[in-house]
Image (tube, rainbow, N blue to C red; front, side, top):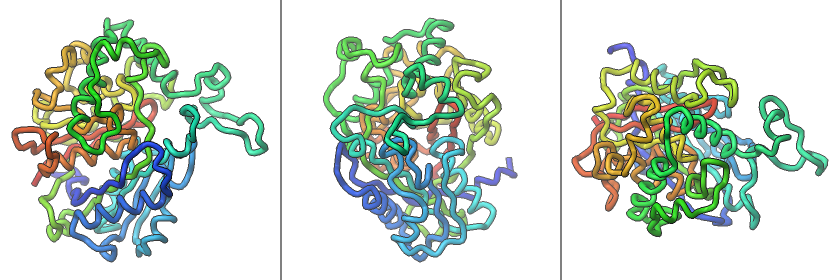
Length: 400
């Protein structure tokens, strides 16, 4: 294929702030730490950055959901921009990186700084984790909800754990998927997190621990739910010509997946055993001659364990309905298995960096910087995917 526009884009640097529980640090400070680290990692300066992209921008859909927006970062770093974007309605969290690829490919910018920051752990205070988009109304009274949430909130379905749990339950019903199979996602994540010094949870986790933990929303137990943290991640997207002057080997964007061909709904999607990743994954393979068997490392969104299973099916690593048997036993997805999966511990153990952590880890692995958790065999092709429900996006990366 010669007309795939995103191949003019490369990833040239990554950065990450301190990551932790209730750090009590200013979220803009965390964001700037990640941004400056990414710029330095690429061997660039602030003067080189002429584009800025983020998800979700300077909005808080729930406490701590956004740590900083475009305006704050542009002003703090005194960037002179030719192009910028930020918002919620895009193909998952990595849609902001896909946007940056299109910007450099069409000449709107040369080096785009993409960032995602979150401070849910500090923002939730000493209480439990709040529901998505649920808070007090402007007058201190009950919140007003509209669109799809007006059909879920009154029934106390406050959390994506409730909504995604229904998709998982349907998958269990239709294909015979079991909790023991799904458990391999958090068990594998914990094994990898033990080798990641930044991971939140590094203690061993067993199948008995998993099955004995409290249920959150059937079939999800505590260990199927990601860990709210404070932290920020940044990546640099550069035009392939401009990237030649950067410090590291280029990571070319081979293809992106951003399609949404079903209804954008939690309960009106045409197939309730999958979600938007079905279409994003299909689009990815429509834009490359590479195949699932060519992937050396897979970093797939695990906001809830079932989302990773859905991505495995959507990206063709196994057939529809076959993700349970595919991951059974855990050997296939282990760091030394045929498809190393979520090698930093994912969001289930390393912390919910909300999509960007997966792209960061894909880059780390392709550059051979994983330390103790580095995948053996010099990986050269990786896929990073984020999102679920009504929005999802993915990128296929190759090392130049």
